[in-house]
Length: 273
Image (cartoon, rainbow, N blue to C red; front, side, top):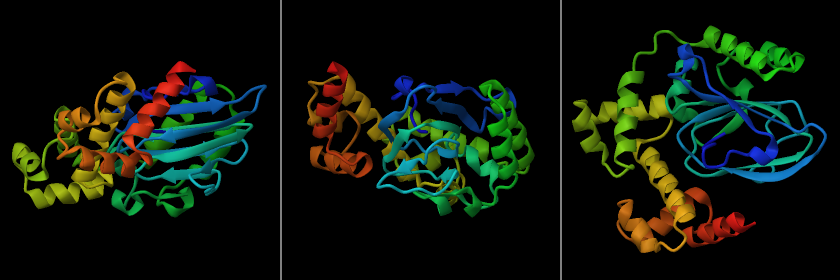
């Protein structure tokens, strides 16, 4: 699940656990949602941040976007647009959220092959997930489940992965510049060939540098619109380095699915409720 800081899902009994030191370079968190004595009827919107998720479902079927259901263990690639998650009935779900570029250490194929894709884990080169799925079902304590997940990840990790420091440095520069930096400038700052950097983004992150940068800027725009209800769209566009308000609005709607004005209105209504 993306951006838990934006939407902690406390009303759903959401719990998050940090990874161990040995996996902290790859994993953002492990998360759990479980409805005990009540049923859930909620739609959550998972905004793209460059991360990838694996979800293990033990409750009623999870539905994504317009009713898509791909099984009990799903693999959600890096996204360029917001994904809807529909929770209905009894919910018992376990998730692994990888950091941007973190999932590449566990797969033997470029991550851009999964860009925007929500697939069954059987469509990935990962192994051992069936046994993990059953072992998680047999345990009740979340801390024990985290230990089982980490044991599995430690078995499937690829120790030859050596591009992570470079791509993480690129991601850090993009974050520091709020996404407002071109790929040629980014390559120059890292003293690396631009074409190599472009290939690394596709392979290691699953997005282009431009797509990742746009995610950063739209995330910041969502923060602006939530925190400053009276700020003009022109000011948001200017502060985030968009060419003009029209370009900003078009990019925002492409990613989030609604216009920035509609998003601000919706956020204000939620805050008052």
